[in-house]
Length: 172
Image (tube, rainbow, N blue to C red; front, side):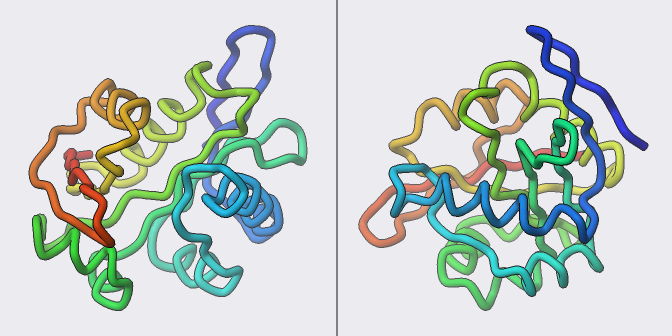
């Protein structure tokens, strides 16, 4: 199912990511990585994204053929191999069938126009009833506010590399 978001004359399609979206996801990750002044702390490899596509929905926002947003997900069991996710799951393990939400990223020019909410709504539609877990850096109030507006609740905090992180959870 493809959902359209129309606001401020922007025609965006929201749907499940396919193989044709991989390069666009990777490019948007790279542009928004902390090394380039963005807020993403890690980039997933092409292989990691492909593997995740076989396990859970990966959601993208597209304008034409261009990926302008993504919302990636991971099975909870995969979190044990990533130190920051391991720290998050130690602070709050979540339900047995919980999954890890994120990262989420929207092209800078489209932020604040409902794209993140539309991707989140699509993810919840595809994973009804399941708990989603995520973390946000404590020093990122814009992201915390955005996620709280999506009815996510704070369930724990943890420190990682000297930075406080907030664990949020929701049920689809």
